[in-house]
View 1 (cartoon, rainbow, N blue to C red):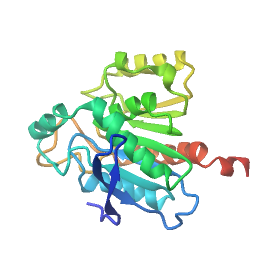
View 2: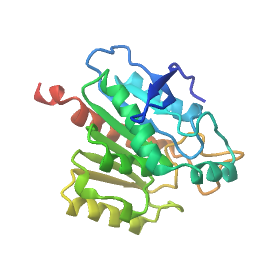
View 3: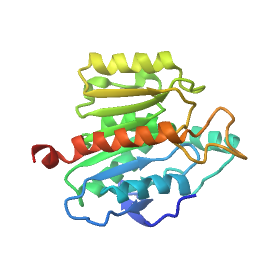
Length: 240
């Protein structure tokens, strides 16, 4: 398990309620873009903290909002219970937007990235949160009809597993078509892999047998993510 190096912070939702989140800071904070990182259904655990830390090491200010309010699990049944108990509309409009607005006080440009359940919330956030500058979706989406692609005005990168037992390849194709038809700047990549291929803890006791970490595809997807974020979140680098 990666060692975490950030800290817990408190931020306000648009409705004034307070939420906690894990904040990882880059070495050079001045002018650094920011990313809201959205958890899988397991909760705010060490693995998703590690994603934020990794983004911070790459120069980004990264915040993981605690959508489950301190709860986390390694058991599939409990994770399903926690996810089904989450109000996705409230999480998007309040928790995630509050995280975006918190980061906007530190950075001009804020993106969003999410995994599985977090991928679904990322797509909803891209439709509903105008402050965002880019989005990265990792193997997860809500029901297609919930996505108003005409409201997505920023670049979107998607990583998908062709052997995903949870999100069918043909539905990924339908999602891509929906985004392209709405003239979204979208880039989808497909990998010969299983669900959660970028989660290094997606093997072993308590994990779902239909998930499998793949270090090769994970690294390629990460490299593509950093390239995408560099192009979308550091426009001065492109101009330079």
